[in-house]
Image 1 (cartoon, one colour):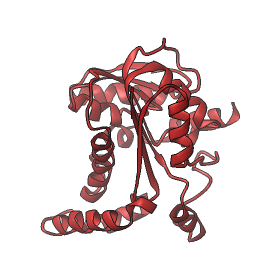
Image 2: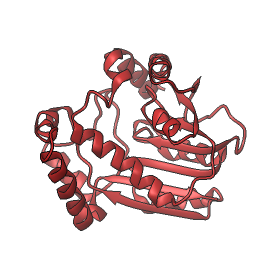
Image 3: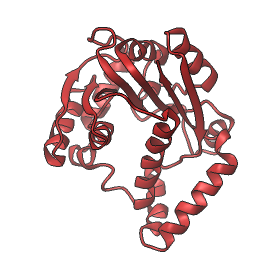
Image 4: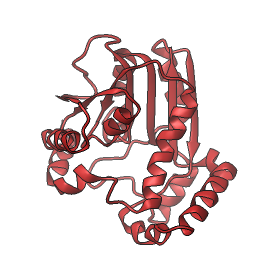
Length: 248
């Protein structure tokens, strides 16, 4: 409970406008990396039957907006009341409808299979027990499950050793990264049969934004996209970004 309170306090301290508008205020290359994460997860899933979806640890609604653009009606669940207020403002500005629910990801206040899809993006690693929340997502989703989280990987450990990543997040809680095999096994144990995973190289931190802004303009951005995709093709399997998707 103490870690949950720290998380709530941390998100209350963030700049509301930045949260509502992200990633529009990010460098073009960072926006591409975010879109690429979501695009690759969707490609791994292959097909989507859902018309509605639950965004667990949904924050200010960035992922809900992405679902809405795909024609999927989002419900945003978060423990932070401030985050939900920002999600409400985002939905109004961007012209999409979303249902907002304050709740605990480890005890979702929904019945079994009441959503077509359940999605989490960089949310489970904040929690004391990520797999407890994963179980809940598997319970409430009927068709598709998408999990995008930091990977427990050698490159992550190397980044921590070099000071490029941390094991303690800004809120003061331990970052609980996931490994692919355990996550797939947990999802299968909850009755999901078609379970797949992949890893990618994805790195951006606020201090890197000045570097990424060098790629804001064409043709540098086009070169960045090609170079990133080639690098990810060669080394992404050892990357720091885990995607686990499932269909029933």
